[in-house]
Each structure stands twice: as C-alpha cells, then as structure tokens.
Length: 153
Image (tube, rainbow, N blue to C red; front, side, top):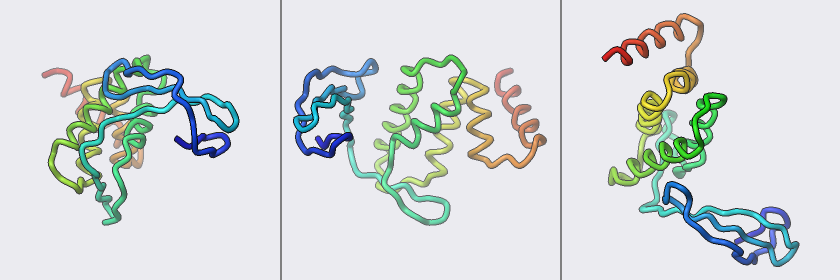
C-alpha cells in the first residue's frame, strides 16, 4: 500500500479489525519509508460498475462520493456515523446486486433520496435541494409539503 505522506510503496499492517457494521476491514498501517501511520479500509467489490451521468459521460462508481453527499446532508443532525455508513453500504449493495455494469446516476440519486427520507427528514430535504436543483424558496416550500405528507401515512 502506497504511503499517503511520502508515496513509499511498502507499509506494514500493525492492526486489522472489522468495522462496526462488518462491511469492511480497517487496517492500521505504518510506512516503512517515513514511519508515518495511516488507516485503510478494505471492502468487497462484486463487480466493476460504471455510473452513466446525465450528460452521457461515464465514470467508475465511487462509494466515497455517496458517503460525502450523505455526510454533508446529515451535518449537525446528530446522526451517528455508523448509521450513515449503514445507509451507504446498503446503497452500494443494492447497486452491486442489480446485475448491471452501468447504472444511471439518477438511479443512485433516487436510492440516496429514499435512504435519507427514512433516516432524517431535514437531511432528506437538504440532499433534495441540491439533487433536484432547487432555484428559490418556493421549491423548498413545495418539497417540504410533500415531506409532511409522507410523515402522515
């Protein structure tokens, strides 16, 4: 594993354990070049998945992008990191088990929306405001009205 500090190619694993949700292995490593310590996560990847963007561009699936978006939407909401990790892992599993090698970004966005709707209504609205490109306060108002309707059923 390449050191993120000095780019030396060799590191030694000092500690290895599963993450709390058992979806990855957390490894503490020490660089043999500079001695710096860093953490890596190892996850199962069933197949190579390509994301088909709305402008027809293609890019490799990146779990980190979903994780960053969900974390940003949940910021200052008091949601445990473990719940965020479970949501992201669930979305990744859904994508990998679809059996497709290309997945539209819209499909991934809708999965995130559904997961956040069940997790926290404010995070759901925050994510939707960016994902659906709200232009003014009226867009928020209309969308928030649908969130209240969902909560009544």
